[in-house]
Length: 148
Image 1 (cartoon, rainbow, N blue to C red):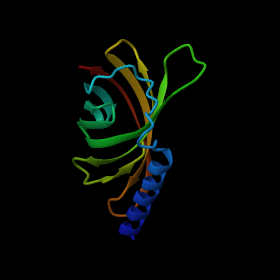
Image 2: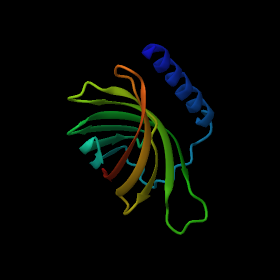
Image 3: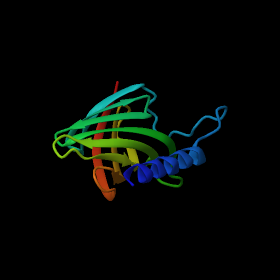
Image 4: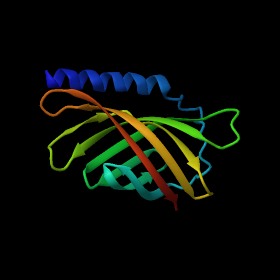
C-alpha cells in the first residue's frame, strides 16, 4: 500500500513538473536579480537549519530535526507590486533524524531580494509522510540566504 501511494504521489509530481516546465528554448522568468550560482543561509525548516542553494534551483537543508532536498522547477514574479516579490514552486524529499520518518514534499513560496546579495524567503510545503502508513502533513519554512 505504501509503495502504491508513493508511486502515485511521484507520478503526480512528475505531471505537475511537466505542466509548469518551460520549453528548452524559452528562458524561465526569474524575479530574483541574484544571478550568483551559490547561496548559503539559515532557516527555520527542519527546526534551526543550514541552507545551501545551487543555481537558485537546488536547495539543500540540514537542521536539528532532519534534512531536505528541493528542486525549484518554476519561478515567477508578482505583477503590479511595488516590492520585487517573486514566487516559486518545487518538489523535494525530506527525512527526520530520530523518528525514522521520510517522504516527499511540494514547496510553494515567495522570496524577496532584501539587497543585491541577500534574499529572504517563506514557504509552505505539503508533505507526504511515507513511514509506516502514508500521512499528509503541512510544513513551513522561513529563511535568509546570502548569494556569493
